[in-house]
Amino acid sequence: MTCNFDTPLARRGSGCIKYDRRPDLDPFWVADMDFAAAPAILEALHRRVEHGVFGYAHPHAGLQDAVLEYLRTRRGAEVPPQHLVHLGGLVPALSLAARAFCGPGDALMTCTPVYPPFLNVHHDARVDLITVDHACEHGRWVFDWAAMERAVTKRTRLFLLCNPQNPLGRVFSLTELTRLATFCQTHDLVLVSDEIHCDLVIDETATPHVSALNLPPALAQRTITLLSPSKTWNIAGLGYAYAVIPDEALHRRFAATRGHTLSEINALAYYAAEAAYRHGEPWRQALLAYLKTNRDDLAGFIRSECPELSVSAGDATYLAWIDARRLGLENPADHFEARAGLFLSDGKAFGWPGWVRFNFACPHARMMQGLEKLRAAL
Ligand SMILES: Cc1ncc(COP(=O)(O)O)c(C=O)c1O
Image (cartoon, rainbow, N blue to C red; front, side, top):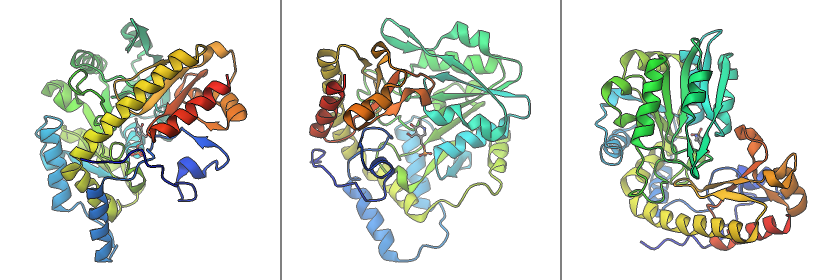
């Protein structure tokens, strides 16, 4: 399949958060890609727009079938339709889980660094947050099991997992996932597994994604798996995600907690999601090949040109997690903004000040220009 990921797109002024929040800066922050959606998605959207009527939407049979087929073929899970909860996004689902399963005096737990909403949804539920740092072992990010055992309390109800991990790029192994699920079973926690990046694993043979849906039934019963085609096919602005909840009681409580707090899912989002799952695989393969080159060239550049920084080249996502602590700055993201006009994600929001996150899902030439600015600011 021919995909031209090299073509620069004029996104400024298109009402996109990445470019239009700070028009004065060169953005490599929020996790969306500077690539147009796959032609099959655009065609599905055009067809739906041509219909011309945009009343309240419903998850139509084609969408439902595409999701179940995706779960069967790509995630290796036979899921009955009644296990699904359709949602307008994953972040509301994290908040919903916190509100559904934690009460006053309870806590939820997660490991840092992590995607910022993981560190904030406890406010929605007015409960405590327990964080444990990931550890680095032989150059690989791992769970610090001993620290997790020390940190968990009797009032902890929920564990929020990000797998593949944003920002570390780790794809956790079956052994790690099983150990985490066992930890949740031992401490009677619900395991919420955010797998939004699971189709962005660069080498799926070397580091296959293992979904929480693949856990043995006794462990899977306490899981809520959150999925979406939105990151992989760059359709996050349309807003569609879903939860898979095998246990009936958890499903009921999660769904009931929605109350009137969430808006209806939009009609276009359903059709884009269906097209992504049904027809998006060749485009995804081409994307992964492109991202691999970007990831490797970014890591090579930082290693050879920016000795003050270090980067761990992740197995998944298009996000590089860069250690800038040796610069001795209080806020390296601010420094790169002031010195180079770069808009990077500040590690502080992920729980780790002194680090920055660089989004490399853009034309290669643009990424290299961004990296040159980074070097010049050192
Ligand atoms: C781990 C993770 N979860 C959720 C989201 C956002 O999900 P949504 O846009 O569906 O709310 C992101 C976006 O970057 C993410 O990285």
